[in-house]
Length: 145
Image 1 (tube, one colour):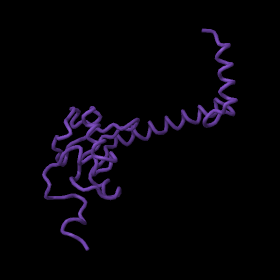
Image 2: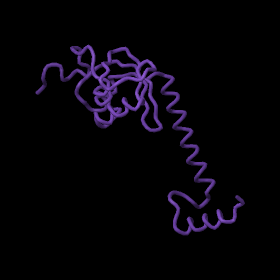
Image 3: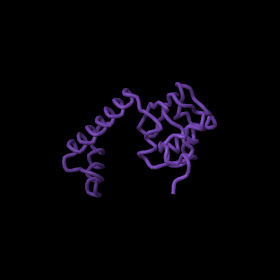
Image 4: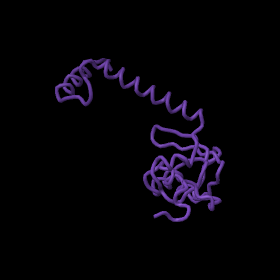
């Protein structure tokens, strides 16, 4: 059974919503408290300005989000107070082409670094064994300081 407006991803009755609530609903953060902490820590900016978690977000604003090594620049397309499935949540924003390019190039760079590290180590792949660790310690002892 469907209630009025629950099928729509965007809630047209909303003029604005708290930034921490939107980040949670758009699935950038798993919990509202994590979203609030990120906003307070300066990891989320609107129009390149630090904001508070209580800042009201409107459609059409640009939001910069950093989480770990990932960074997004998104344009707010919709507002919703409830957390919905990921495909629906993705309709609440549109990532800018520059942001997509930055994220994919960074991801490719990290993958290349991982492959180079595995190749450089030869037989060292994954977590080193106790034997590998001891060999590394012996090698470090003989290095000039």
